[in-house]
Image 1 (spheres, helix red, strand yellow):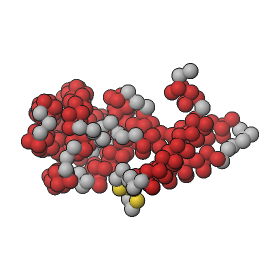
Image 2: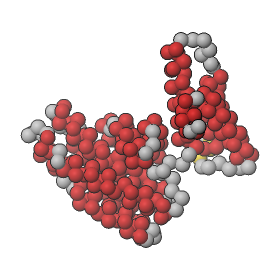
Image 3: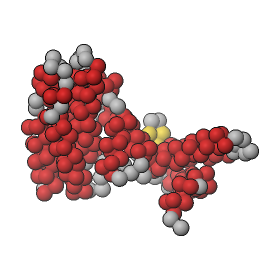
Image 4: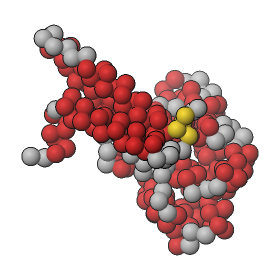
Length: 280
């Protein structure tokens, strides 16, 4: 029997086993002084244990002989709980890097998608209303150069993951991120609703990939380096948040990593939270 299929088809039983294991492991790790980092006022381990316990409590509320619709809703809630726990316990592939080399490879792996997204931006102006095309073109005119330089520096870091190549990569990823944020704010001022939506969609596709690469770069940067990157970020995430479509961003991430959209949605949310906390 396929274990993945079995887990998905029997979510309550599988979730209960996973949650019990998570709560037990969290307890053992806490006793040994293992924290896995801070999470608010507590630790990641304590948060994982608390979340596992809470979800077990929800699972205990069996709908029993209720309607089929209620049972289906309970199953969906259980599956969502499983994804929440998985997202918490498993390192994110675009945030947690074991080594500089693995992170560098992950960054380089994003470059074909980045180049494709930028190419889509280049062809978008012709699809907008005549009055809106110049605004869009001006806002995205630097994407090609920024993309080419970022790809070059990502490959340079992969070939030589040193402090020098990392610093160059940090500078370029922040520069590109700022260009994307500026373009989003400019596109939001387009009056024609259809043009505005089209412009925001293609710009965010580039932004999603740049954000993923930024998270990877941040994962191998020191606190001082991240603080410097934050200081260079004039347009913060909060300023462009109203114009972002996290569902679309999750679809892009899920397609790249070959994972469920539900998990990608949580990863996007966690990455955005990390970016905001870093002051980016």
